[in-house]
Length: 425
Image (cartoon, helix red, strand yellow):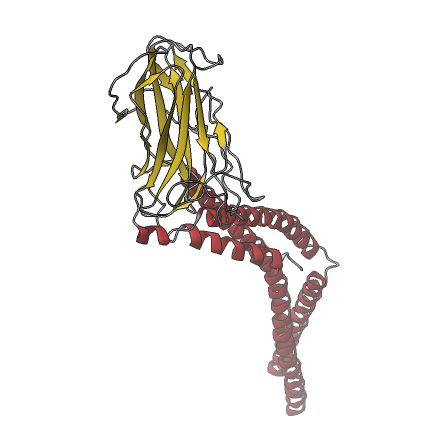
């Protein structure tokens, strides 16, 4: 009897490591302390654990199916009279029955000899009868010993046959247990990975405009700065999110606002039709900030209207592929060409409108378990690095979560935060 022992053992071992990994500490939550964070498995480790658990479950399932076929075949074979163990059992039990018959005949002979001795009338007859009785009793003793030996041999043969059947069922039971454990580990690993994928809020990750005026005249250009500050207690890779909109502009139409950002060597222009990520900042340590230069050109034919800008930081670290900083809204006025705005204060950050900061669930495979991002070209500012020049093969772009909805007439804009997570090892 040969079962897939190696496969069953491999499956059981493969299950153990992932379980230990994602049950060692509670899931990471936003605002967790640095000490707590260090106790958590990284996202890449969770991805690998989930993949390992899935593989272990698949192997255990195959082993169980193979074991089911094998135990059936083994039991059928053990039930055949031609199987060595079954044949030995049949032979031993036949010999035991024959020995029992011999013993019974010997007992009958002893009874008959005792009767002959009792019926003897003279001394000669009694002597002969006594001699015959002793001989019969000797044969009976031999028959008893032979029967005991035959019974023992039959019991041993039956036990060997029964043990083989029990062993076959036990082996299959072990495969069933391994499958149950593998299934549980797979479910737990997938649950842990799903929890890690969920976006978390980090109020300490701020994105604020510095120098954006509250009034802008058509035909002019204003320079200002987006200041991204990591006020959390862990290092983050941040994709600043921007959106500019002038009231009354139809979606898809050419905007009066042309917004550009500096990558350190030139100016990159926003598409202007929806929220966009710019200047990915690779690894802002706790307490660090990074300034991104921005420039807004207002068309000379722009009419007087209200406008606004939205700024936020979408980020990730080795523990979370989706970390979202608070969004800030800056309202400003567009004035006709030639206007004299006088002394103009900077636009003040405010909370976004009801629909501005909606972030629905995204379909996300997450960063690759192998992870890692290449260093990117340095840009102006303090700390960090900007201007993505390329990503490693393990970086997984996530794309837009959904479209931007402009609620005409109400001045509310639904901005859906797109996030782009890079693999981290």
